Image (cartoon, rainbow, N blue to C red):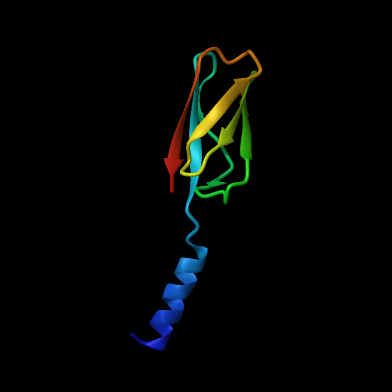
Length: 87
């Protein structure tokens, strides 16, 4: 392997951070994608996201591997589901 190829591979590895977005579906306002990318591995830290569309606000804890738990809403969302989108 040439030196230039090694450098290119190292740079690609350094910037290729795995993460996840979330697709949120509410029975009152429809489906939207959370704008902020969350790390796929949060190193054991408790990580949360808040996302709003129209009158609906959704909060959830993000688990390692892009799962969620503790989903809460402001009461204007109807039924809510969250799907993780790993990238």
